Image (cartoon, rainbow, N blue to C red; front, side, top):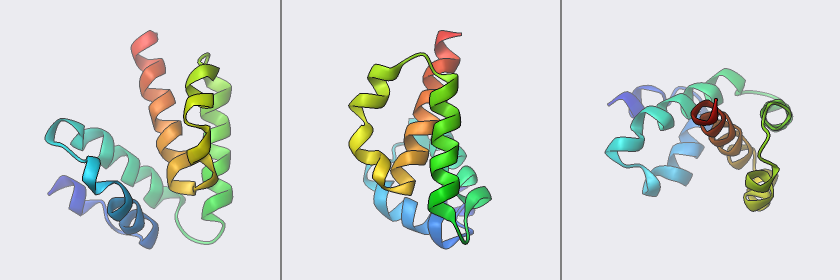
Length: 95
């Protein structure tokens, strides 16, 4: 229910459709956080704002190997935001 409650923009609905196969009970909080970020950035110029969000996350991260590993997904705004969240989550564990 928490995930479905976050589907308030077309971009969030698209992200849900793209990533719902990987949604498991233990990943719900991270997925809700991702959809909240997508809702915050949704609308015109969504792709540009997603790219800027990823740049901020890369700038704050020390793990460029992780960025290179997931680099193919950054052409897609949803993939870019997912990578940004992954970097921030990983950085939170390292700190």
